Structure formats: C-alpha cells, structure tokens
Amino acid sequence: PTLGLAGWCPLSPTGAQTTQLLVEPPWRPVVLWDRVNLTCQGSGTASATTWYKDMQRWGQEGVSSFTVTKSGTYTCQTDRPGSGRSPPVNVSDAPLCPPHQVVLQVPARALLEGDTVTLRCRY
Image (cartoon, rainbow, N blue to C red):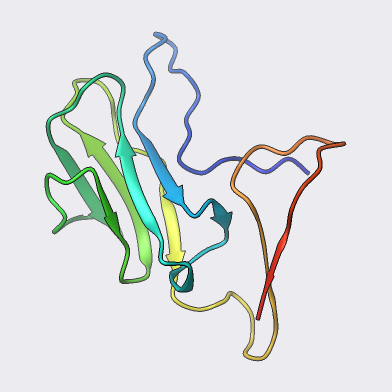
C-alpha cells in the first residue's frame, strides 16, 4: 500500500500551495514519547499562525512551531489569504494497541513498491 505524508498537501486547482503541517520526527503513528514538534507552513510569507487542537482554536497563537505536550488532533492556519487550514495530525499519548505489545512506526512519506524502507518497532 501507499502511505501518504500527513501534513503535505497537493497543489490546489489554482496552483497555490495550501498550508502544511510538518511533523518531526517523521514517523506514523505520531506518539508523544517521540517528543513531537509541529511546524505550520503556508505558501509565501505569513506573519501569524492560528493553531487548532481537537477542532477548537488553541493557545499556541502566533508561533509557527512548538513541541506537543498533550495528545489530540492538531491543525493550523496561516494569515496568508486563501491558504486554508492544514490537514489534521493525530498525536497519541499511548500506543494504539493493548499494553505490553509493540508499535510499528513507518516513515511519514509516500512509499512506492520497490522502495527501501526503514521501519521502527517500539515497545
């Protein structure tokens, strides 16, 4: 299967790039134990960023990046006209499986058949 890069958007019909939410480190699923940093990028230069957590406007007003400390679903929007809101990124505080099992993380980029891939197995 092909995996999409969360936070990267295709070009809009008008050719303008929409807002991107970049995740570092670039692993999926995104979990707090990785000390996750989110960065909001819009097309062109933006002077202000609005952050949303769980669909509600959220307290990291104005900053373009920050380290996540709470689980939730995050999106962002720059003040650039027409840039729109980024695709959501879900950050979990625990593995999405029962205790005492492992989590398999994959690179957060598009993968094609035949690609060499490093997988990350976490306990």
